[in-house]
Amino acid sequence: MGRNPFTAGRWVRGSQFFGRETLINDLLHSDEPCNWVIGKRRMGKTSLLREMERRINNTDPGRLALFWDLQGSFDGEGLFDSLYDALEDSQDEYSDCWDGIEFDAADEESCSQILKKLARLLSRRSRSLVLLMDETEELITVGKHDAGLLSKLRRFLQTNRHTQTIMVSSPRLEMLGRTVETNTSPFLHGFIAFYLGNFELGASERLLRQGIDDTGVITRIQQITGGNPFETQLVAKHYFEDDDLERALIQLETNPTLNQTTEVNFNLLTEDEQQLLKAAHCGPAPFQEFEKAIIAKLLRMGYLAEDVGGGLKVSSYFQAKWLSNNLMTEAEASPAHVPEVVSGVVLSVNHKSTILQQIVAIYKTFLELAQNGQRIAQKDGAFVVSDGDTIVLNRKSLQLEPAETGDARPWWTAVTELSAFLDQFLDRKESWSIFRFHQMAEKGPDHYAEKDFLDLMMLIAEESVLC
Image (tube, rainbow, N blue to C red; front, side, top):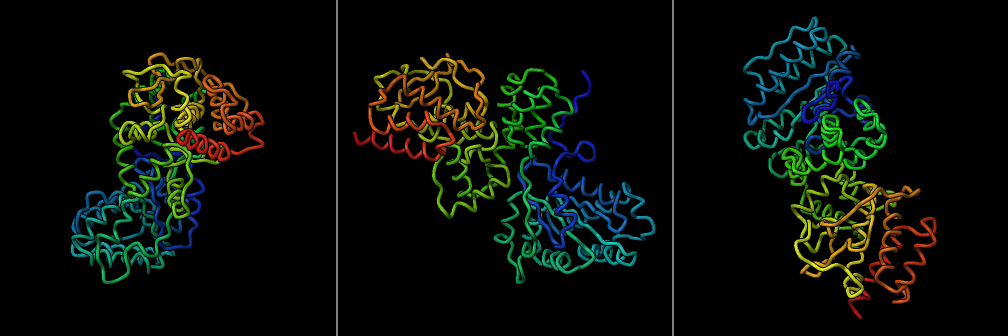
């Protein structure tokens, strides 16, 4: 076995950097002086800046890119020290770009004064400064100690025509305006926001092709991670070392770094955003008009993804698993989320009412399996009714197999699986709504959308309560 080409948890650039071409092009050619890229933890924000630094300094003689890591700055003195370190590091690594520029940062100068002096020196040589600011959440702490310092820095960033700023952060930086009081415009006013989400299929495939030749394995990893860069690298790294994808997945489900990252990213969201993410995880549901903006944000950041049928789902298997294990109550979770049953009875025709009341949750189980390319091999005994009258998968004897279907829409696979499941326990003439469900399922996905089936399932559940 050769060197493992996959890395997880550290920044990359050059030949190890994949994707983000549209975003990089938009940023490099932006006419706006201040740009802000928002992304979850471990989505590649530092890699994005490092790659832009490399490209600008190696190919664009009219600009100098300066990477500035603010992490640990704490106050004005710390901010100065981090900028001083950034200047030294840049002069060491890109010495050719600094050739002929006599520049030193004096201890008595503020960060805005230092940057203004550097921008002036560059402009005299018909060059401009591209300031790449990393870990800018640190400005919240700095601002609490010295709000005036932020005001001066903002004035420089917004008004210096020889400087373009590209800063990255998690959504936490949105708190800056609420936690730091200023007598002038808030720091973030004037910044144009971009979002750093999951990889597109092409980028994740190119990354995975570094060390994996099996197209089936590549597709499976893409389905599991949803294009999340950190998860893609982590799964690929473990698979490369073990050559057993399923065993790697089991190991990663308890990986403390992965679980901690997922938890941190969930906690970055507002309460409304967290509730919407949980609602999407529970299963297809109608969303209110005011929630559309939240949905758009969660999609752009890679928390949510659209399934083939146009519905919403949590973007990766690991994130869904973490939600199930840490946040979902039994009432919120679908049968697929519930751990191995300790006690319960095998589902039978005696549980008709329970089946009807929980039909949406059962559908969600089949949907999750279909999204992972799986189906229940033997439905007899596959479900049990727990002591709390909740229908759950019987994981003690559950057998899964690849979902053999020519249709690329997981929701349609789930509908056909649910139709066959209902036939085991219910007479099609049980009610008009049950008969209608099977009738629609037999016509195919070209005649109906997932929403049509979901509306009918909700009606079936409501009818069962009234009977």
